[in-house]
Image 1 (tube, rainbow, N blue to C red):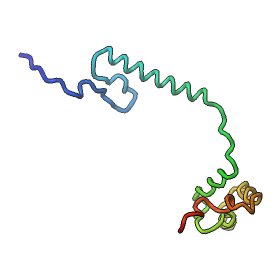
Image 2 (image 1 turned 180 degrees about the horizontal axis):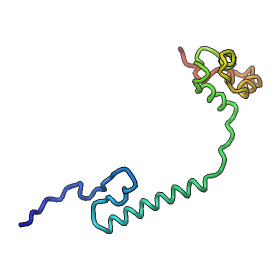
Image 3 (image 1 turned 180 degrees about the vertical axis):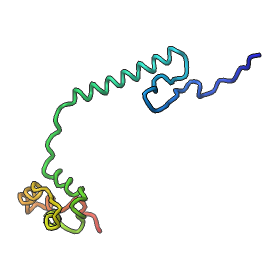
Image 4 (image 1 turned 90 degrees about the vertical axis):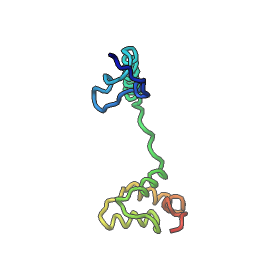
Length: 125
């Protein structure tokens, strides 16, 4: 007496478990199992190849990009309502050791509001 059960949607789906045995836990026919394993291994090899060949150094950020990074760094306190130079001086006075290159950039562009005012200057507080 054999009981035939109806096919279910989950019969054709991959069983996913976390860990190293992931590739071995696939439902389905044996041919499908090897196909899934080979696809997974191919993807892993491609990722490793991309990581190995992508050794080109990132370009140096522009002075304006450095200032934006300074605006986004909360280690030096809030930046709304003051200029970047005022924030840098306040951080120095509080002993927070702000980057010296930021002060140099601000000194070089003292008349340019794009460099002096922070990222959120145009927004109302």
